[in-house]
Image (cartoon, rainbow, N blue to C red):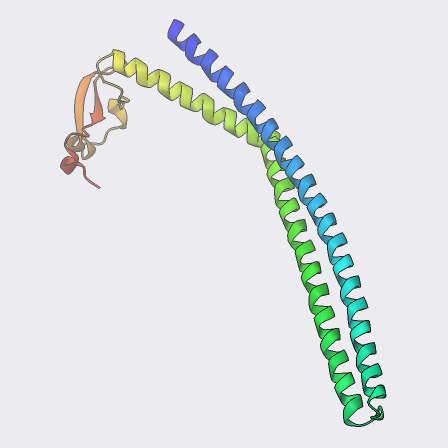
Length: 198
């Protein structure tokens, strides 16, 4: 009975430790989501500045093209006007590409933050903690009974009740002593796997 109390105490300590670890994990995920949102904001500010600089430099470039054409004595019509229009179209396409990349980066930051928040929710979810605690308790009970079997000569293998063993299955099992409910109990003989029938 003392061993059962020790296993119960150890299982309780582990369950509490798991609960605290889950709460700490959730806190870390929420902090990560906040950091990602801060990175998103910094990236948006940088992208806005980059677009402004690109726009200013593009305006200066097109303005200098028009000035150079006018100084050369060529009129702003026909092919010279087409060169300016093509350059402006190229600049507009580059501006849209930079803007698109900035929006896509923002979406990526949003997805990463959402994933962190989802992980935080999962880690702090009471049902998740309950299921984890149930797994710990089940494992502790299994370890306790495996220890009980070991002390009764089964050597860590769980005994199978005689009423649950079909005659066909008995050929794959090895008798290991008397079952508490009466009759011979069995265990799977892992030393002779060729005897196993499927």
